[in-house]
Image (cartoon, rainbow, N blue to C red; front, side, top):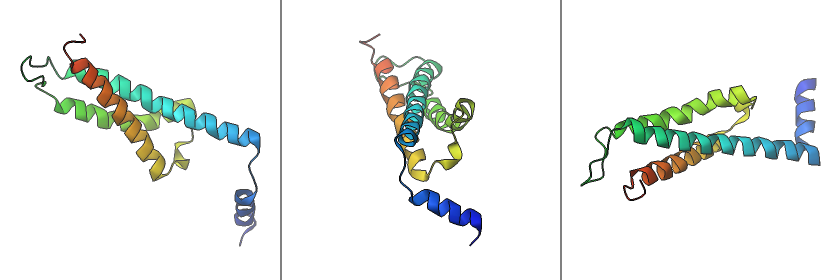
Length: 120
């Protein structure tokens, strides 16, 4: 093995310090906040760009726009991570699933609340 591979393996096995754990925790909080704000933003855009809901059925004429905006919001998070200086290359499939789910959940809640005509 090369010296770099041995050093990387030794670095993985050593226990993390309190400061390293705090840095990782702050990074996870930032990623979660990005997903939450992106979901709220995309949910609001989905409501306003999909047209006026039908008063009888409560459906919007162009509801597919909301789904497309949701997908764009999930993809756009990568670029927000770049702007915030978060290393998105270290994220695994599980992390991206979490980011997508949080964005979906807040998008769904925001859009549903805005579609509820008694709230408006």
